[in-house]
Image 1 (cartoon, helix red, strand yellow):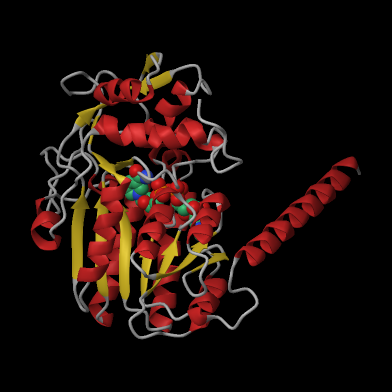
Image 2 (cartoon, protein in one colour; image 1 turned 90 degrees about the horizontal axis):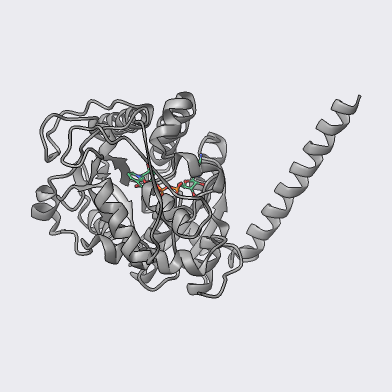
Length: 391
Ligand SMILES: NC(=O)c1ccc[n+]([C@@H]2O[C@H](COP(=O)([O-])OP(=O)(O)OC[C@H]3O[C@@H](n4cnc5c(N)ncnc54)[C@H](O)[C@@H]3O)[C@@H](O)[C@H]2O)c1
């Protein structure tokens, strides 16, 4: 009996919480009480659907699109993103017809179809995804569902509503662990974890679909993304419960803030110069530049596939030293055994994107990127919760 009551109480609490979230979101939208300009195509205005726009990269991309006068609709289920980031964007761009936020899950095909029906999108930037290699090895089905099935849902809605431009967030994890570095777009894709496999499947589906529809597609394979908005408006604020799967920058900052006692470096016996993994760290500002260029250069009937990286590999040890300097904290480091699903060395050859889209990474000083991100972290000890004074 007690168990039943507890279950019922939890359901009521969850329902009340969700209702509150809905109301807040509805009120946050400047369009909530007017006939939406988002539902009409407007000459000279490009309306971009940004899925996952409450997340780290999606929110930075939305900021850049808004700055460049695009109309933006963010769709996010807030499973991993932050309403606080959307709120900041809405405060920066409060004018009608600039930005709207729709709380929805991309797994809900009916809802996604309704969103496409009610909005006149010109293009889609599909960022929404669960995106942790380690987690994907523990929960593979979640990854195939969230990444691969949801991409199908988005494509079906695009087909049904004649939206013909797609910029897709892919990853270097689709290459797996190639023997030869650097990685070019021709390097065979042999992913070794469910995250990389799910993204590769999505790429294949998108490419096949584009062949029969004349879609303009750009697939961007990002390397490891770091940094944040140089003007300090947005940052990276993953859920605390994801800490154990987290990325190295988040872990360094957590250690520097004393949230965790130190930094765990997993794997010191890789076949690399200092035994730790080598990665290619790309600043989020450069990454969103690549998206804007990709959108501007997307051509009907063509699929552009590009690596987005600096072309330079840095070891985890190098990264940790840069992080110590950027934060001014002598972070304690604990060396552990390898993490399942990790690969030794990954760095890009970005010459194709440089040649074809005239893009090269500009923010390649690791310490500088980390310093910018640290400034935001230090003044947002609770992520997008109430801002705190900088020490
Ligand atoms: N961060 C990196 O280093 C990196 C590297 C390569 C590729 N990527 C890709 O970039 C994209 C964005 O990554 P990020 O680092 O910003 O992650 P993030 O977790 O910060 O953002 C993802 C967003 O998608 C939303 N989302 C997830 N599932 C959803 C669903 N079913 N419906 C609606 N919204 C959903 C989350 O709530 C979150 O706001 C992902 O596709 C990821 O695979 C990231």
